[in-house]
Image (tube, rainbow, N blue to C red; front, side, top):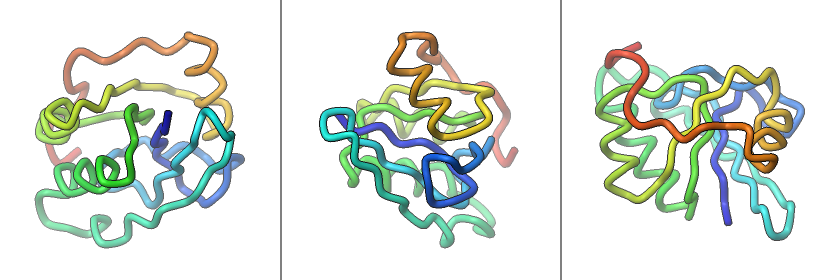
Length: 119
């Protein structure tokens, strides 16, 4: 299974990016192979609108089944849910820490957005 994690850098040791749609990178982690890849999200960093929906489409195309992020707005949450992607919010410091919490079953699945749009 593939997990997308919002990140400020390109490695598992990078800090979590609290934003979903405007995250600098997504780390795509494969739980079966333990391989990871960084995916640039630069086109959405300064987008005036639609960043969350576009980011949701991007991680869906990458095959992610779950997303770990600091916060997720309403439009992005709806787009992720429509794509069958489960959302988990975390206050972990690093991507690796967030993945470890997820794998240990210590993150709860979000039932709705936790911030307003354009956060």
